[in-house]
Length: 542
Image (cartoon, rainbow, N blue to C red; front, side, top):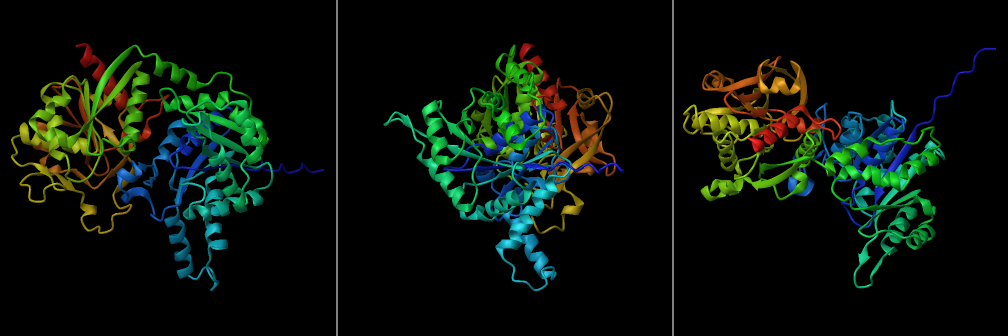
């Protein structure tokens, strides 16, 4: 008798929704759960569904949306995908971030091509089928797919996604899908008690749609006692042990996996999905948190930007500095400096006492002269400097003006009449009209020259980094700039584009055209960030 063909194990799916208010941390919850499941030997991938009509976040205002996170394949995505990549091992792609705009664009294109054979195109089944297809595509080659749904339950924009999830759960079968609902349990000082009614109403809204949560993750500022857990269990139809307390972490987001583990959330998910996944004996997150909480050193690093009042605008930069601090057993105290404030002479006082200065990426002319002043301060006073994307361009502009003597040198983006456009628009960008997804995006190779600070940090000649820009160093000026002392230490080998510059007569002064902050992890700091914090620590001790 022939051997029976072994049946393929069914895919497992976790859907994460949010209720009551936005910004509850669904993304961090999903990422932390993914991290715990990976430690138990399960392969995990995480994706984000966003109900807004923008095709991607690439053209959205940072004040409203925070940073745009770029993937290897050039996809401009939600910042939550940064959490997914930092907490878990897998690299993500365009298939891991889906917006309503993308869905409706795809459906309309299919209708125009006649793929629906003249049928009346409707939300159900055409839109929901498109969403379900994306879920299936993203789950290939992994044991579990975790899908976070942006927005708040009850928002009209999110209804097609919730309906698609309801259908998908029915098709996937019992035991293969878990619904997690992240909700707020507020504390009223006047009453002196936690209130469960908002959560009850949020769950009721989900149940109206046909979705029954399996797990409640309760965001709260006060501990949830047994009585509250039993009340939520009764009124929301979930087991008592499935009511998970999620209080604000003490000092770092990297404490969250441990907090959820103490609540036995990973055990519950493993049980509900019938997984063969042994418990974690010693979590890597314990070591990360220990090093975060007990550093032997401390440095003050100034981040000079124009969206500085908004935490999420430079989210990956801040996290990468934290990772570099962990690697150097050093606490990194980020001093946020508004670039515009440095345009007045008295504003430079904000840079006093800093052990390192970083200028992140950005667009437009606001605050440019302040950033140039910050670079000049770092160069002249031998303070470690790290420039990212625009930060490299600013370093070239400052050097061209104040060392090379090119009066009025500037970026063509800022001043189209500049006599010395040391930063110019890339040739392929000159005829582009549409703004969305048209920049130089994604992962590109860089050849790092031996004997440079960049090579010392990377420890290898060829590296790949993610990019997001339209402008570049003008190669017509490279020879002059190098002869004056600002060396090109990294280039794109295929197109001879400047990828990295550094000063030879400076302890640590380096700029990159890329965004290395998108490849840093808490347990594996990016080499350049690690070297920058190390140099800042050395400067402090000098």
